[in-house]
Image 1: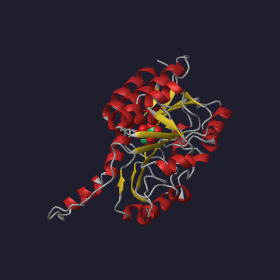
Image 2: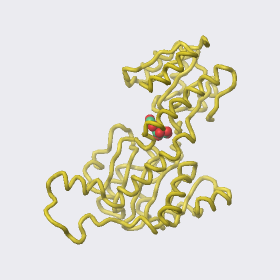
Image 3: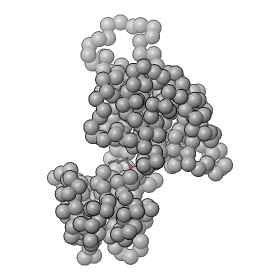
Image 4: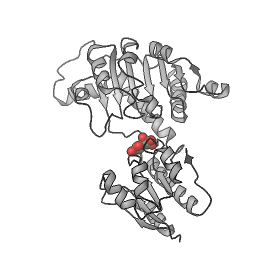
Length: 321
Ligand code: 8YV
């Protein structure tokens, strides 16, 4: 038993909590209160470590109020809730949960692409509303997925897993754009071709966003980028809110060029831009791309493993920054 004090900021799987209790003095939040930044700082003031769900901001004001804190372990692969500079200055390590969610998240990205292109949510709403009276030749006719061109913006592990599904399973031509180009062997395994961002926008029948959120990526897809997309294209965002300008997107869904969009993440979530709720041609899901029980368990366990390894003196397993 380590004498470190750990805060688990939201409800998590009881077995993971029980495991943490074998190592640490643990304060849980199984009541699942969503604390404000001020409340989080109060709860963390006497803690050495934290297990977070990726939405709690670790920044300079919080760090100033939490002098004992040495590690923040996210139960997410994304870590835009960390101010890495402030954390480095305060000597606080950050960790995330890569790999364990890659395939599950790629499955969801592909499911959202299919649902979007084939208008599944719109069609279901129509049926549930009792409006299905007869058959029509163009009823909910959507866009082709197999054999079409998929553009992937952001080509990390999840982007690559989506590319493999697209190329091998659906015979798609896969284009990608990323900060850095993949090694030739990886490109060959994904059957993906590197192009500039403008070419990606112009050529993709379906554009899938899988890039991390950074201040530089804020509104990476805004009105000018949307205007450059193919008429009838679809856009799928499983990355982070703020990468897409949601107001501009609603406009592009209303008056073109987009045929449809699938969104799992939103600017300012859990709030959703009201204009998006008003357009029929968008599939909306509440940030669930990694949500299978097995994967969420693996994410919680890896976050716990990071805390255990760190306080054992072995160093964090999956550090960021
Ligand atoms: C999380 C995610 O479930 O891992 C990530 O970065 O976006 C999801 O897997 C989500 O962040 C929960 O807040």
